[in-house]
Amino acid sequence: MKYPDIPNSTKEYLDEVRPAINAGGSCSTTVGATIGNLSPPLVADGTSIDIDASGVPVASINSYSVGQCTWWAAARRQQIGKPVDPYMGHGYMWAASAEQHGYPTGGTIQLGDVMSFERGVLGASGEYGHVVIVEEIHEDGSILISESGGGQRRAWTRLLTREQAENPGITYIH
Image (cartoon, rainbow, N blue to C red):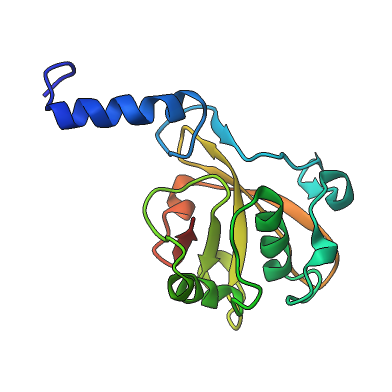
């Protein structure tokens, strides 16, 4: 069927989501430029994030080791006003912990999501897994993520392709 000859329920749904799509909301489509940026944005020089200039409250995170992916994800989520428990475990454990805490998971990628990588997926630690934050969503399905790791007080960004972002070894925590 073609618009406008579609069911009323579909028309109502499109009328509800169109403002979010037009404002660069949390959806992923195909082909093109950035359709959504996380706010507040990060201050970065290339891929390296200036943590202090970005105002990410890393000093308030004391339940995760400084410079680890969990430390960064917890601090960034706090900054953007999204929930995260201070004891979610290692990166690969965050998906199960999120479900236990009642955080919504799965479905469409949204700005500010935590991506919980199973062990070994897309370069994640074979022992600990990995977590990152979705910073931008692009029309071609690629996403810009922010992450940390290695035990040093630093963070950076990385672009994942649509295929990488849709890896079944990744769970999105909203």
